[in-house]
Image (cartoon, rainbow, N blue to C red):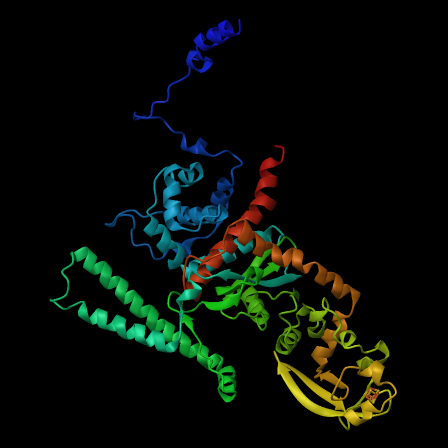
Length: 515
Ligand code: SF4
């Protein structure tokens, strides 16, 4: 019985063999009509980009085009198409010209923009970097549209910096001696290129080799120039190391000499650029972007204000920045310009950490407020009536801090020693920060609840575009090299961000509104 059942099931044909399915024929050519207009839907963001770019004055992009009506020469791609392609690509997380050219062959949004033509990647790559001033103007044009829509007020601008990896490896950093040796070797190679006894290469290959060698030579020369500039900037540090008998040699990258080693996400070190972004708080619109080679944000706020004034012809009423920005010079510059600066007090930067006085076991009754200062004698008097005399002066980021100290003998015999300076081996010390009217006013303001509340909004606004550019656009590493080109790449990214904000806040609500 069991055996019969087995025979019956083994003779039954499989269901998959009985089903009549459509065959897939790949060895054929098809010619199909395509309605280009219908490649993308009515609400597709590529239409928003095209619509906005179409409203802008792009005359600056047309000035360098030589192909004119009635004259010889091939027609060129309209800058309106190339701008839209780059904005859509950045929005899509694509920042390679070759990739865009590939997408033009099959991606409906790119096909819609180009009318199903393919744009050569050289054209795209050149266009991205060849129109610096025109791109600046385009950024301003978009800001004008956003301002007209009431999305920019400049009443409150949040400023922040973000480190983005350079197109160089940390292994490409070389010392001066190595750079000079490489330069010498490259020069010798270039000289040998014209030697008839050298290896016979095809003309095309010879030209490519020559170009590569000359580019290498230029990069090495640029690296040595950058190294000299870096040595001049860090001369004090180098002199100090020499005095102390330490060997300190600076290095620059041979791939991107203008990149600098900076701390990046998760504490990793590597070649990067510091991108400074100013964001209007009303609708999180980027109103300024700049590139810095400095790993520190200190001193970058003045440049941020300058860029806003240049682009919008108006200075912001209030600037909000994190604790890395407020140097003495910055606080005074903002006060001079009449800009309300909101930033943590330099002393409060360690607020998250344990109070250093508490850590040293100092009781609250012996905190600095309990000591009296006499400007006529430049002395402090402690609660026990002893004098604290001037000891040293420290200067950091423009701040001048003067240290005063009590005599060890006074403290050692003092009944309050266990509460005032339980761990000191030198006698109790105090630090007095130099005050000017602007610094005093800034300090008083930052102690108010209103300033604290405004500062609480900072992260949500200032860090939003930084995160969007890195997470949504995927711009975690630049493709281009050098400050100028990195600046252009940053500008394209920020322009795209603003266009996306316009699409979200103006274009989409209009499209979705009932007729
Ligand atoms: S420990 Fe020194 S500084 Fe503190 S109260 Fe006594 S004498 Fe003054």
